[in-house]
Length: 203
Picture (cartoon, rainbow, N blue to C red):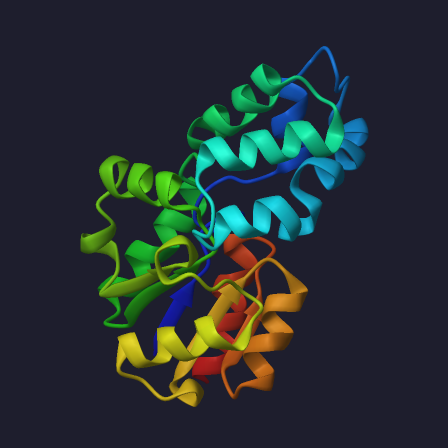
């Protein structure tokens, strides 16, 4: 199988509500309160943050725009942006799944909405080239999921037709977009569930 992994929330930890509760305890008392603050900060990965994800603006610009839009102090917004790499901790269960799939002979790739500074960090911190044959970061190709263009770029880069790819992502909108373009796609909740879902496809 040709299995394509999303990164945030799948291979690496990404839970904005609890992340903000840790980074901004003076503004976010707990993860439940963090849901609303995260929606305002990240705008569901549209708006300012979406442009950052697509590599259309840099970190300084996204900080300025978020501060201007929300009224939060620029220094505090910068604190959140700077803390994201520490949030992106490797999910041990998913790492084990990756190792199992590689050992079984499956081809592994990645397709991630990730601003360039964080993509650079992940490449420095982890042996991505050992785990995956190839991958696409949104910040480097100037397109992001769930838009059609990034899936076409990925398919071309991997040298695979859409129907030959099995995509794992934790966002339903991205799963729906992939399926609409002919990809096989599975909604990721846990590594254990992904293992079961992939096994079912292999039967």
